[in-house]
Amino acid sequence: MVRRGYVDTPGGQIHFYAAGDRGPLVFLFHETALSGNEFEKTLPILATRCRAIALDTPGYGMSDPPPGPPTMDDLVEPLLTAMVHFGPGPYVLAGAHTGASLAIEMAANRIPADVSHVMLTGLALLKPSEIDAFRRIIGTPVIDRDGKYLIEQWQKRVKRWGADTDLAGLHWGAVEQLKVYSRFHWAFEAVFQHDAEGALARLRCPTFFLIGDRDSLVESDRRAAELVKGAKLKVLSEVRGRLPYFHPEVYAHELIAFAGLA
Image (cartoon, rainbow, N blue to C red; front, side, top):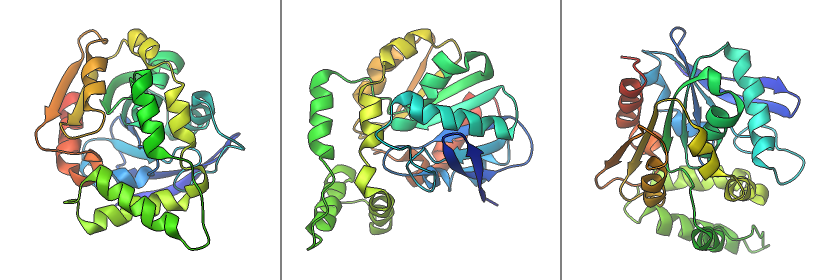
């Protein structure tokens, strides 16, 4: 069973999804502009081997937002406070896209002694030209009275996720973004300003990159894996993004094997 709740932090309440009552603590961090329920199908599988907790990033899902556009520190601090609520390390960290940036910031710069393993999917190790391209795709949230923005956001999602993505999945992604629409772009900017290369250079724990070959950040993961000594990279054939949601069994079993939870 997946449980839900909140942890109070100085930066506001952090909402979580949790499953499992024994074993190591595994924390899961979602991509923008989704929420921790990106892992809701993965959590019951992980729960057979560990205590798995998916946290909503500040400002997304049902976590309180920061007062304005955040830095990476603004996002990480409340999450670290929430993690301590569940117990001491060592922790296994797994993150997708924005969540991958959060995970390496924690593992490399904030709590390196408390992190045993890191699994990353779509880490943003981006060139300036790639950041510019992503900014053009993301755009600036504008709400018009006729609701044209709703159609535009749906069409963008179909284009990015693929016309063959099932309608329920597209609807889920669109609703998650629209729930936080006025600030959905905030975490992207925090990621664009993050020193991912520096964090990767300081990683000392076992690191695994797992990504689909049709994910928008697959080439970024290839570059990132080369910067971490001993890192493992696995590219799944004919697979797009949102692995924990669309391929929960694959994602969970790869994490279980990598972190030695079997």
